[in-house]
Amino acid sequence: MSKIRVTQVKSQIGRLKNQKRTLEALGLRKMNQTVEHEATPSIVGMVNTIKHLVSVEEVK
Image 1: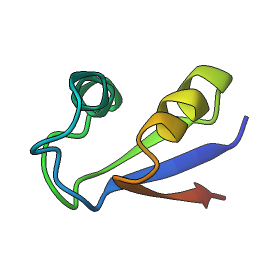
Image 2: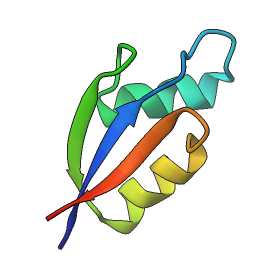
Image 3: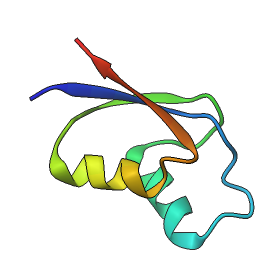
Image 4: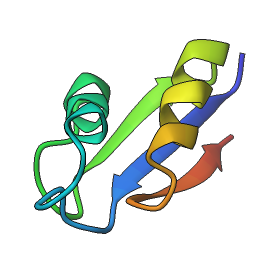
């Protein structure tokens, strides 16, 4: 499986509760924090839910 690097680029203030929970589930708690995850279908679905709050890049 490939890995993806997810970085939070926008604040979670004023967002819907499910978007805040998705950020927390991915391990993102602060602005500009970066985490790496395996690109499983569940993780990709979570990233698609909050794609307007994060930037995603593929890790080699």
